[in-house]
Length: 237
Image (cartoon, rainbow, N blue to C red; front, side, top):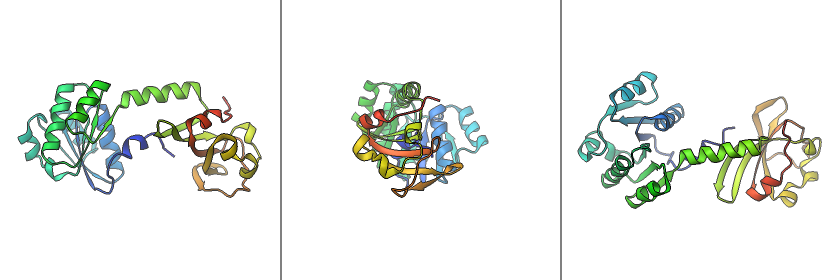
């Protein structure tokens, strides 16, 4: 399973088949690559001609054009008003990012996701109409801190500031105990959603039977409060 990407992609309207990504730096390229691999049609945009050429060469977008996104006429000619969802992936140039977001909204795009580098940047983006603001560097920093302090947790997806879905190895304390014996909901305030199949961590049994016995080292996916998740016993090795 891959929970970490859900934090960003849950904010995209994935019933749409076309997305535009403005800014082809590391974050923008990652978004293009993932959307393209999921089968969506992606238009990549950047002011740097080399980045545009590289995106086409690497086939991470169906189309890519070089233009100045601070110019509304250029965005209009590129067909941006025809997109329902646009990702503004310009994070390091605040003025360019804010103007681009404003332009995209004024062109009638209904859903705009914008990358911010600071809280002030994020506030400005919301002021000019961004429907959702993401802070990739902050989220990566938080994920690193958690991985260092809770190494037994393999992946994490925050539902909100107080609740998460996590993927972790079955600890020794749970080995050979049934789900009903562990009574995770009452003991830890979490619910077991899925359990990896024997000898295959890539395949999961969703909503396993209460009489299923857990085995140390298997992968379990639970949902619950962060406080409860932090109380789960986790093997460090």
